[in-house]
Length: 411
Image 1 (cartoon, helix red, strand yellow):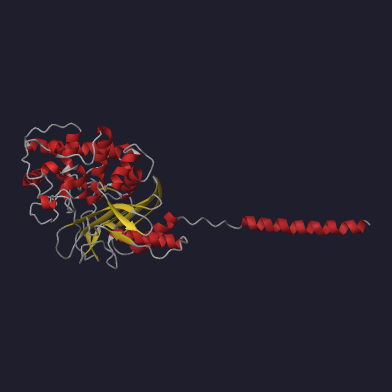
Image 2 (cartoon, rainbow, N blue to C red; image 1 turned 180 degrees about the vertical axis):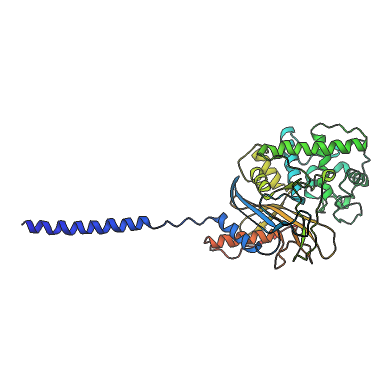
């Protein structure tokens, strides 16, 4: 009888030993890390940008949490005075028309504080001494941000102006010129529409124009600069943001494919700040646009006014995609409109899933003047396609995602 009970006990013990050993082996196996969409997104962007002899940097945020980044190439080369220096996510660069969204943040913050509506007229906030042309008294804040004010430039042909139409005297001329009734409400992208906020923001904060153009020019430059620094940048921990290159050395702009020429320094933008001009790093820009537009942080804008900015296209554009709508503003800056082109291309984008991506590159396609992709794809569809490829790598079963831009031209 003893044998009868002994055999099963030995047999059971052997089974237990085997099971424990198997369990130990299983526990020793590495657990596969979960596939993270933001990591895949960074990989697809890097695959398309690296080893192409151009400087670039990007960051990806989910809400206001930093998730991934990438960079490569050079901010200056051996032919430049500073010598060869790498491009990183901490490289300062002119963000060009991404600055328009910052002007919209400043206006929307004041609108929330003062009960101003986007449909209010701008005329009482313009210098009293300025001559006001036809229909100037009809222009609203929203129409300026939407580029539907009727302003079509001093040449009258909707050619977008840069310097001469965005300094104080140029803005004064545009207001004196007035706008034709037929152009009211029609889309015409003009830097000057948002450039006017360099005057409107100080007026909204209480500045009283003196009537002396030199004085008012200097004062509004300073007031706009300091308002944005204190009420936008510093509230999320960004300090010493300027409309000029850092003292440590400029980030130069180049052509692509790179021809060997010296880089171009875009310079400073104190007297045209508004529609363009801020210098940020990819890391700083990512933190800014993610914190203000893709997170619950209300230190700059209440949630309702974030929606006001995004849904009314204040300083931004919206695009329809098969994955849902997205918001963005791109930046485009170049030396002149002659081949070969050299300059920069930038963007921020708010994607589905509350993702924010910022991408800077310091080169333009030398023949087209657009984003330096290998197939002619410009920056907005380029980033969106990288996002779509990342979704597929994560296991999405949908077909190729589509995107439709209402205004596909560079801005």
